[in-house]
Structure formats: C-alpha cells, structure tokens
Picture 1 (cartoon, one colour):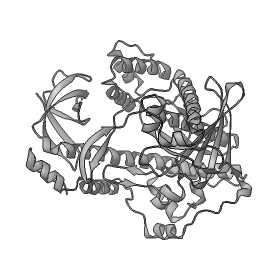
Picture 2 (cartoon, helix red, strand yellow):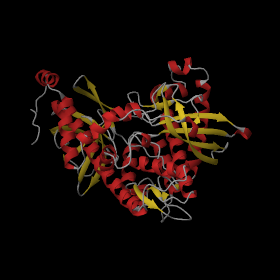
Picture 3 (cartoon, rainbow, N blue to C red):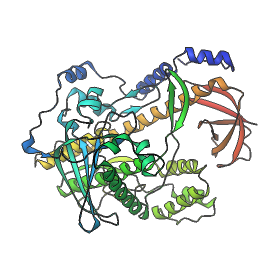
Amino acid sequence: MFLSYPRTNGVSSKIEGRMRSHRTDLRSIARRAMVERGLLPDFSAAAMAELARIETAATDRSNLRDCTGLLWASIDNDDSRDLDQLTVAEPGPDRSVKILVAIADVDSLVARESALDGHAKHNTTSVYTAGEMFPMLPEKLSTDLTSLGEGQDRLAIVVELVIAEDGAVLSSTLFRALVRNHAKLAYNSVAAWLTGEASAPEKVETVPGLAAQLRLQDQVAQRLKARRHHQGALSLETIEPRAVFDGEVLTDLRIEQKNRAKELIEDFMIAANQATASYLKGKGVPSFRRILRSPERWQRIVEVAGRWGVSLPPEPDARALEGFLVTRRKADPLTFPDLSLSIVKLIGRGEYVLDQSKDGAPEHFGLAVKGYTHSTAPNRRFPDLITQRLVKAALADAPTPYKPEELKYLAEHCTEKEDDAEKVERRLRKSAAALLLESRIRERFDAIVTGASDRGTWVRLLEPPVEGRLVTGASGLDVGDTVRVELISTDVERGYIDFVRV
C-alpha cells in the first residue's frame, strides 16, 4: 500500500498540507519499514508487565564510590532525555588533567534474559525517524530510571582517564559509583558560548564553578582531538537533515551541524571506549570490539583523490587520506559533505567483532585507533549494555556473563540489526524529503551533483538540503558540478524524488 498525494501547487495544496498530519503519515511509513526490516516497533506485553514491576535499584553505597559531590554535567541534544553520560574534569600535576566519564548503569534495572532484555537484544538499538522514535528500552527506563537526569542520584560505571598536555592518555581505570547530574546542558548553546558567539547558558552562569569546569574539559577535548587527527583519524562530514515540524505539519529539513560541544563529548567518549576495551583485555575477558576495516576499495579512493591532483599511497594510509580531506574542506566547504559521503561509502561499514587476542587489537580505520569498543550509550545500544555487563563482572571478579561463542553470535547479530536500523532511518529521511517537496512540483532549484555512474546521476539541492535522482539531462555531469534542476515527481512512501535538468 502506497500513500498517494496530488501533485498540485499553490494555496489549495498548502491548505491541504495544514489539514493533513504529516507526522502521522511518516509514523505509518516508519512502522511499516521497521516490520519489513525485522525490527520490533512495539514492546511485548511481557516486557511492559516487567516494566511495571521495576523500581529504582537499591543503592548500597558500601560497594560504591560516592561521587555525587563532583560537578557532573550532561551535554546532549536540546530535546534528549535518555542521558547516558556525564563528564567532569580535575586539574592534575604537570599540566595533566583527570577526566571522569560516568555511564548510566542500565544493567542494574534490565536483567539479562528478561523480557526487556529480549526486546533490546532483538532490535539492538534505538531507531530515530522523522515519524517516530523507537527506543531500545521503554521510556520509563531510558528517559527516567536509567537516565542520568538532572538532580537525580544514579548508579554509574565511571571511566577515569589521566590526560597529558599533549593529549596522550597516561593512565585509566574503571569503577562503580553513585553520581548526580548538576546541570543538564545542550550542545548548541554550550558550543555558541565556548566559541564566543553567545553568552553562557543560564545554568553555566548560575552553577558555581561550572563555567571553569567546561572550559577545562574543552581544552582537554581539543588535545585529544588534535592527537587523534595527527595519527590519521578522518575528518568526515556528511549531511543528515532533521525534520522540523509545526505541530503535525512538516515545515523544513534542518542540517545538524557539528560543533565544539558535540566534539567535546565525542572525544571523551572515544577515549572512554578505548579505556574500557583496554580494561577488559587486561582482565583477560573476551569482549566486543567496534572496528572499521582497512578499505578494500582503496584504489577507488586513490582515483577520487586524483581528480583534485592529489596522489595517495598505493596502500591504505589513514594519515594521507586525512591530509587530503583537510585540504578539500578548506578549498570547497560547500561540496565537502558530498565528497565525505563518497569516501564513507568506499571505506565501508563499521562492525562488531569478538576479540580474544592476547596481543594487538582489531583496528578502527576511521578513528585511527586500536582496541576500541562501544560502551558509553547503554540506554540506546545493546552492544554497550553487553560491554557494561562484562565490565561489572570483571570489577567484581565474577564469572563472565557471556560465553565466547555467544559473544561471537551477538557481534554478528548487532552488526546486522544496526544495518537494518540505518536503512529504516535513511528511508524515512527520504520520505520526509519527498513529503516536504510534494507541493512544489515544477519548481526549479540550484543543485550539486553528488553521484554520477552507470546506475544514475544524483543531485542535492542547496535549499532545502534534499537529494534526488536526475532522470534526464545528466550527460557530461560529474560529482561536484553545479546544475539547475526542475522537480517533476515525488513518491513519499518510497522516498523517491525525481528531477530533470533545466
């Protein structure tokens, strides 16, 4: 069954759009897409009954460090309530800084092999679409009982890192603790303040010591980032528009830009994930690794760089590729996201693998690190919850909760379902774009060619940031060319958008 909408322009179409619930349409498409990909859009009756019986875990402080007095804060999206991490910094000797990352102890309320755990194990991730968000765990847990909400005492796993002035991690350790979020902050407002574009958010001004605390964290994050990129971490930037609604009506697609606050959290989470992998390896515990293999299509990446007169080495080299990316971003920031996307596709997908190696570790090509796992988002990703259970068992010197053969299966399963979830999200982004443009048939737009091959030519509009297929007039065009196009059709259900060249 496909949604069919009239291809009309003008006032009547706008009135019809106001009368119809775009959000409902997208929700229906999202639910069908979830089922088609073998994902569960709803929780079972058994899981909901289990949820009703859950209460906040007893906080036996005798086995925990009481860290509630530290100046913890969260930085996340403006509307996020499923808060997985808190951070705090403490100055050390020799200009080193101790960074502490608190990760919500989801395992304390979601028992292994429970009905709730079964749902999380099946989907393996929260799925975020323009129509509906499908959480891995019910919102009573992920946005309340297991969320590190402001003013709440919560159980957590803390990763403690000592960072040198040059960004090197001097030491790391993990422990269980009781923590309290003293300020729920948002990426955009914190970033604008850090870069001097706006005044400090209210809580940064009113919570004593928080401003200096965040400045210190920002300095350390910049050190970590600089060191990673010197080692070859890739500066990639892709466009993923976010749907904007006025009530139930879709009104715009807004690009979510990277900013200083997002990078701060990203750099700390990468360091925490490395420290967690190192801790488990030191304990001799078989565990997940998140890897991105050395690109098999490196020769094609060499050819792409050659278009701009850049010669990359014949064998995969992350540092050389990073140098090329930095140069292209400076030279042409407008088309850089499209170049990034082509490189991302050529590098390939990340995946989860079981690591039982005694020396060395699987590598993550994009981050230029070895021994990397996912551990910092247990409310949203099942691999992180698995890792958390392994860490808690190691901390207690208890038996490992998962056997190696089970971890091997789960690594493959989580990789597969992550791919399914990404396809659902991508389909809904396309459907939202088609829905936004459905009343603008025969309008003309400025666009950039984002793909040109035997399979077809694709263009991205400069405004709104929508991609579609160029069905005629593609002769002679190549990636990066600017072109004037006319919209001729949309299919909201499939997410198809077709243009012709003017």
